[in-house]
Image (cartoon, rainbow, N blue to C red; front, side, top):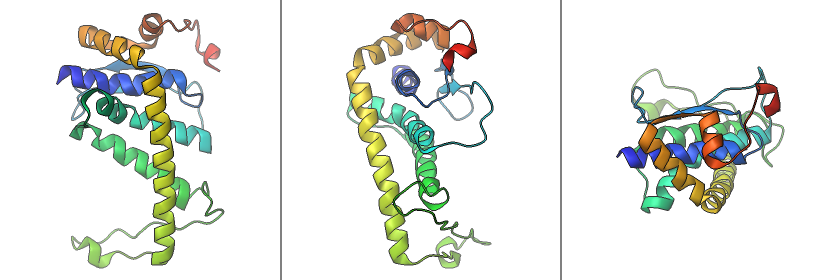
Length: 196
C-alpha cells in the first residue's frame, strides 16, 4: 500500500514539471493526512484571482496524475482516486456551465438546485432542457477524455522518472521541490521569481 501511494503521488508530482500552467510543487508526502494516504502540495507564486482555460486543463491533468500512474503500473486503479476524480469533474463541468470555456459558448447554465430533504432526485430542478444537459455532459466528457489522453502520454514518456520518484518516496516519505529537482535532474530554483 505504501508503494501504491508513492506511485499515486509521484504521478501528481511529475506533472508539475511538465505542464506549463501549474503552480510550482511545494512538497509531496506519502505520510497519511486525514483521509488522504498521501498529499502533493503546490504553492502559487503570486495571488491569482482568475484562471484561464490552459490553467484549468493543466490542473485537471494534475488531478489525473495519480489515477494514470496507478493504471500504468497496476493495470487498475484504487478508491484513492475518488477525490481527484471529483475535483477534475467539477472543474470541467464549471468550465462548460459557468465560464463559457467550451463550444457551447457564452452562456451560464446555472446549477441544479440542491434539495431541502433527502429525496434528491425528486426535488432537483434544472434551468435547462434535457437536450442541453446532454450537450453539457458531452462537453465535460470531451474535456476530461482529452486531458486523460495527454496525462497518459506524458507519464508514459517519463515512466523512468516516475519509477525513480516512487522509489525515493518509499525511502524518504516526504520530498520538497529542491529534492525532486535534484533527483530528476531539473535545474535548481534559487528563488520563486525564477519560476515565472
